[in-house]
Image (cartoon, rainbow, N blue to C red; front, top):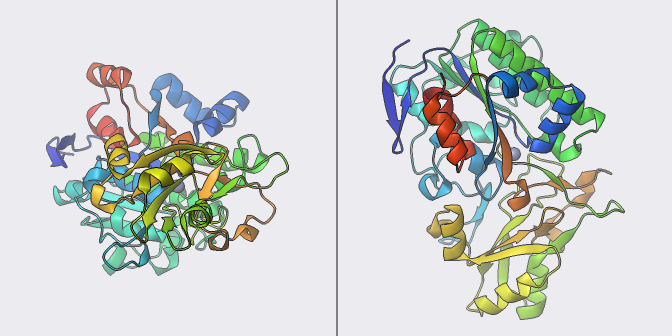
Length: 413
Ligand SMILES: [Zn+2]
């Protein structure tokens, strides 16, 4: 392999000298790692802590999936790449839009630039809706496990994925949707052996099961085993998460919810505001579109400071910032922010109107979700030790999940 560097969004990345695999374990809260290391179900991740590098990094806010996957593949925060949630209100049309393509992406990706520089790159993701951003301007193998049976040479650079992995396309709502991604990664590494690979799972299990529950242990153990296989095949493996995950229910099992749009409209007049939940995702059953961060858009001129003050007084709300404050503090794009932003605490979710959220989808599970500051901490792991410069940088901080390519490509001994 060559040893040139490629510049992407103001940072330089060395092309890989050995196969490099970046894994984003969706919803991998540090609590799962601690639990699995303590009870011995994560032997390979424990070895990374011993032989490689392990730290806790910050994810981008809101702590949602596509915001953070985009940050990780671009190496920059949302103020640069533009993707600030799964779901948004288009101020030009007043329409509410789910992000399923790369239309709002404002910059290139590390994977795209590497592939254009001749590095053999591959992307496998659980959820197909992420694929257009992850494989943006990238040539090489790219597919989702969700549509594994539809992958074709023209569009995905690969066919017969079910044969490659050795089983049929998994159910969209299953742990196997993610394990299929990792098995595809293992099989690609032992066959076509891409120089650089990005594997992104789904947080189906973490939304449903807390650290210590047998289903959570079994899933992370299965992930760990596949990480071991990738390392055994000679890859440098780097692992982080898009966000953490917390229990958002009361002791009786009922979810702790602030219906902020209902509260604001009943206090300041019907139709005063629309609340947008950037976590909204029809592809996730287990959170009812409820997370710990929302954007408030005024529907008509109103007293923003008074609305913010009132929001602050609601139980479970931990932080309220106006448009400029939230953009400055969390590196968000000003032109895509609401009039103000509301964060609920680690035990509480914040939503729009009661009717916007279907909690019957929880199907008896306690509500577990993310989106806020309580889910900002994520593991940051590398299978090989850092060089002196990057050890220093990691110590000095801040360390973000979107530094993972930099560390994997530039920071390894
Ligand atoms: Zn996620």
